Amino acid sequence: MSTELVIPGLPCRDLDDVVPFYTALGFEVTYRQQRPNPFASIQRGGIYLHFFAVEGFDPADSMGSVVIVVADTEVLHAAFAAGLRAAFGKVPVSGIPRMTRPRRKQGMSAGFSVVDPGGNWLRISGRTGDGPAPESRLGKAVETAARQADSRGDVPAAVRVLENALARHADAPPAHRLPALVYLAELQVRVGESPADLLEQIDALELTPADREALAADLAVVAELR
Image (cartoon, rainbow, N blue to C red; front, side):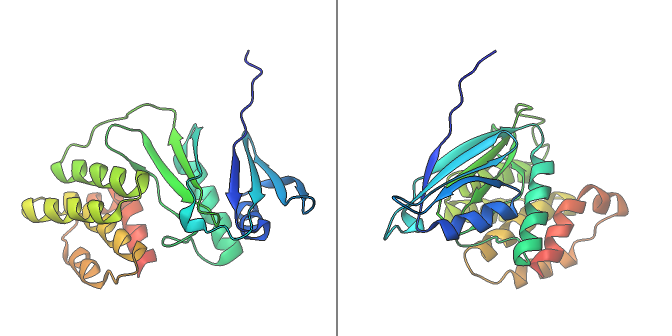
């Protein structure tokens, strides 16, 4: 049994920026000091993170990044989302901080990202491997877009992927179009644009009861975007 433990040290502008955010996510502060240098350590289960404050630090310039592998990304995301709503009234989806929702990336298992108030990325991934490949071309486009936006942070590239795919496969079944339209609407919100036109297109889709049951997670996102 391995005895090694690696704990990343991440920068922030002020401990009071990051500590309340992480306590909302269910982390416990195990140590904190202000002098001689601002430092805090936090823990949630087997996730250990250390933070140090840097005067004049700009979170937009942070290159901090941590990969966290968990058994079930959906369960962890739900816990994080509930904590954020309880503490701040909503789940931030744009700017810094923000959190994406679990989505399978191209060639990767389903996962999501958290960008904390220090600009550091927590990249949450599952242990289950690649999982089933999407059956539709629009599903593949959503995976490609997720890799661009949620993994690389390149939202414009993801938007182009989705817009091109939706135009190319305009005759795709409504159940295939919905996830692409929902993700595109999410990305518009992320960059501060209104998703009103996309929500109208989503409302116009003729979904069967079976479709609505299968796409319940996407439809819940639509309700939040309104």
